[in-house]
Length: 372
Image (cartoon, one colour):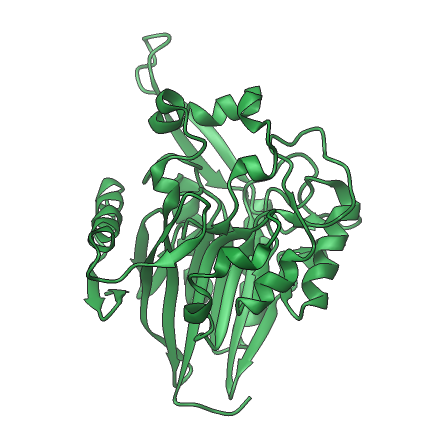
């Protein structure tokens, strides 16, 4: 690829379609995404024609294989398949999804036929700049993560500990502490060390966090992100919670804890009867808009962003995001600074950051909000 002074690197949160015309979900953002020299995304559902739903799945997610071509035509290059839905439809659909991505000239990471393949990085080359990607998943249904002889995703499991605040008062509230499992954290850091000398920029993708509950981060997320950056990661891109989460700067490196939904069809397009199921009720109880108003997703889930950065002289510069909003069909569109929703989303990000004691400064630069 010919050398340029500046390369544009964009990224989004969850993508995945199960509609008749999968290209249509990108109709309002395709031109913007096409401006990227390198585009990363997280694939949430399987893209397969075969398979059967696994018994442990709350919402078995599978889209038509033609969604792979739509993702590629939208401009994506690198796709993490380290998702809690990767084994929703069994091994047949899992391997078909990886084949679909590769046939469409997409580079899947974070999943494979065994743990060695799931941990394998991808290195994108932009002129003489090498950008390395690693992907892991902390949201792990039974048998979802890969092993030496089992397919699945690269895991970073978490341990949960409940501490009773008043030990002498039975039944009183407790504090929840979470920690990354060292058995998984050590290989992740080893992968970072191995990749660090091969690339100029190292990006870590993490499928993690607490879904649907606004703002709140789990302890293990900050612990894992900080340790990864200490080891050499330049940028952490998070997804899974289906809502935006805080943006932190640690030692000069940005951590986007969740970029939210992006081009992801609503749950009832994957299962028309989802509202009737007890598993959906358990999720609905997490957010008042779903619990009391019966919405299939809260309004927070329609707030989105596109991560944006320039790569200049082999370094990330002007790291930030462009605010986006999903319509009722979950088609994303870019917000312009003149729209009230643009300021609302910026204030939302400031609010959730403050809620978690993270005081990142955001500065507007054209249509982008830059992380200072």
